[in-house]
Length: 413
Ligand SMILES: Cc1ncc(COP(=O)(O)O)c(C=O)c1O
Image (cartoon, rainbow, N blue to C red; front, side, top):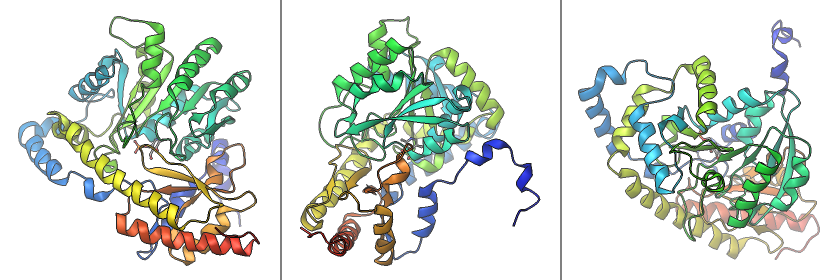
């Protein structure tokens, strides 16, 4: 039945949708379900004591400032700290290049607000991050997808996509959400060159870059772009908008992230942010700075890496042992997710229904493919559950998969 509200909503609400993942998380809130569905950090690694201490210090020493309104750009010492950190990876930026946002998710929304007119094309990897699609759908974006393999976006296929005249290229180079793959150095370099050749900006989304469990750190796309352009007096004024977040390094409940972009783009983003929420919570920014300022993050990230590496390894080992041989999966060098591929014709959404009955959950992959396909794919998170639970959950899932393959007439391995 139509409600009186129905005809009052703006056109853009027609392309707004709730994230499949959020809906799924609701379903898996029952305590006896083992969920590999969400993208949650391990609660065991939250630095609760450090936050407690920092809250006390901040309230004692800067209470009035921390509880007051503040600048839209963000708390200057925090922005300067981020700039110094980026300098370690040789990106020449300063605080003018940085905006603090309420999570990277907010930055994705602002990017949509700034750049996307209804009907504009955005180049994305297939599969890609669902939250970005959700943000940009509301602005009427259309997508051109570039396939990806175990080395990330197949950049050789990018040129074709760039010929449609997209607004920007969206790329997740490190331990991609959802697939867990990492874009190779050669492809990163080629991406920068092609984007420059076609005059198309790149949005680089990098929440997981520091969560590497093996292999060598690879330079970010924003760094390669700044190198490609040469020195620029300490500012970055290139072709990349780079996003990262404290969600995976400290705690997602802070809603604290940052954008690195040329100062003129930052100024526009600041306008969007002023209209949206004036600024990110002053208190959260100052407390996070207090926690992080003396090199705490460098130590803390070691604990996160150790914890997640162990969980990834348990998941991979158990899959190796118990999954049918017809199912394939990625072996991520970092991050929080791995990606399973079922035999063609098998629908991961159907498998999920059975899996939930058997008290285990994952995210079916189709929703990560904005231009279709991927029905036989699935995303598994390995950061949230402890090793024992991972083993039990993968065992349940292995059983469901074997059973389903049997029913479909294939021979389980
Ligand atoms: C690729 C990607 N971008 C952005 C986000 C949003 O992060 P935040 O918590 O900073 O909003 C996530 C969260 O999982 C993500 O995986």
